[in-house]
Figure (cartoon, rainbow, N blue to C red):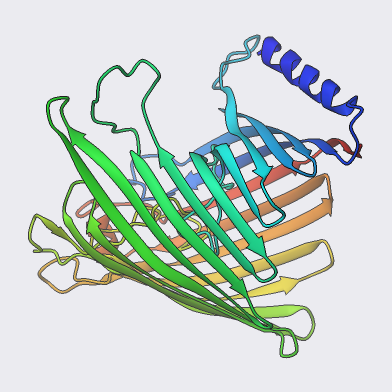
Length: 416
């Protein structure tokens, strides 16, 4: 760990003392501590078990360099649980979250290569997953094209489990290949995007490697009317090919949400998500269950994360909420979700998956320090018990609460 920090110091020192002009050098950190009370988080808790309280600490160190032709970013991440490392020891949880370089071939066209966090549109299919203690990143080559109003990204990845590979063997850590195209166009009040994703998987043995490909295609539409203080977002995606287990896949996602800003610093939101699902007696070699790919789980379908992993039967989430802007630094939101499955849970025709209430509050003290807290409760049904495998078991009333403190010190931000 000491060697890593010393190396970082040398990198920063050399960049800071560079005699070249027209450069930007930034060094900043994020230290985030989150305590969670879990009494039925992600699934109902059996009555004979007690609730838990967990504290997590995440530290990020970001180094950024930018010039006329070259942009580079390096992010170190350390994620740990309070008490997971003995006093007097440092642990060994520090690693590289992002490490990429970008070169501008022309003012419009550039390419970036390395480990990169990806986020597109509403973050449903690609997200940095910043809520998690360990966010997500991808090792890939990314081609970028941007003109006024139009942005195009083409990404491609090919994965191996290590450098010792001398002959082909199935890669099972995640996807073997990833290729995608994203086009985004800005109009006066409307922005629209189109996304196509092809991810490939492998299974089998060294003698016979079976290759599996899944395709996801769709788009995102956003309307922003500042005059009427109204926004509307809609997205739709279709999946085809085969899922990871090589089942023939035909699935879809439809989503829409609207937000209206009211006088006295209030706003209301309403919307719904429909994730297609498989019938309980579907053929064993077929699937109609949509997969959220590499998107965020916490931002959608309830903060208590009962449906972070979608049920095989799919999910319908209808929600309504209100946000109060209490001051320039404080806001609070209350949202109610009503859940059901897209297909029957069993032969009895049950689709009721329960409901949820989420309350979240933010206090942005200043640019370097903020507080966030929340409370969620889930109202279970027989359908919930079936999906969570708690049938015939007495469970507690599910609830979850958290308090999060975030420090964002900026060590320096210089134009050289």
